[in-house]
Length: 174
Image (cartoon, rainbow, N blue to C red):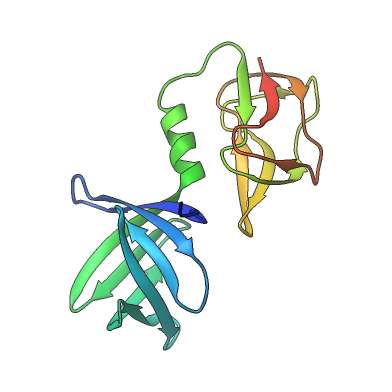
């Protein structure tokens, strides 16, 4: 069984049904990356501020990658210009949950294994939908866990530096 180190979702803006699931399978000098289930060996070299030589299955591709916001990029490859929106798995889960209004008791769970770096709230605090509750560090990336509903923090099951597993309870907002 292959361990997935990270999962991202890339969408080409202005192209319907263009979402790609990108999974990092091995992280080393040459990375193993699955795109919609197809596995590639990927390496890259930086040639300037935004110029990259990306080597996919031993074939080099010169691309220019420029960030346009915290999750959007402009990519120029062989004269073709692409606007890409990149979301982490946590952000995708959060956006899916926030698509429908949450009501009642909300048990906030860890979307991935990691360590709670910081908690922003205490038992009894009032929170609004979207307010940050805590920071979960996973694979050297900080992921902010936000409230999916307005309410009051009723229970907190973690402290700073607590290790959590997938779907471990973090807190309850009611």
